[in-house]
Length: 180
Picture 1 (cartoon, rainbow, N blue to C red):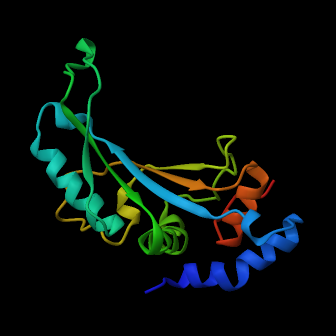
Picture 2 (picture 1 turned 90 degrees about the vertical axis):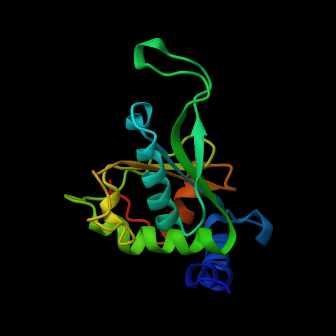
């Protein structure tokens, strides 16, 4: 079943973007290809049970099973060994991606403390990174079941070749960017 945002994109946003961006073909219109949620957990070095709790919470936030990420090399200063589990990530595509984007824009981002808008800065390839300092902004996180507040990185990958096209796409999804 298609999500509300996916239907909106296919029926209205795509046609409007084609016209606004002056594109010749509907296939040139940028779209969101995937969303990656990533969280590094430095406490996992001392206690591996922390990572299982974090994995459960990220799974609840995303609606899809999260996987552990492992250290690629040893760093003695951080007491880190190659192959140690140090984080959690999940890649969303399709319906779950649009569901998450809808919840992110309409529920989670407005709940950020002292929120004045997101910076409209992309990576040059049309991808947007958003660092969320406190995962409690997501309603799926049960305040009593988590040990402490943690941060989360959200990367929105788009098919846009230019940053201004990606900004136009994200603004059409009502992403609350700061006004210049």
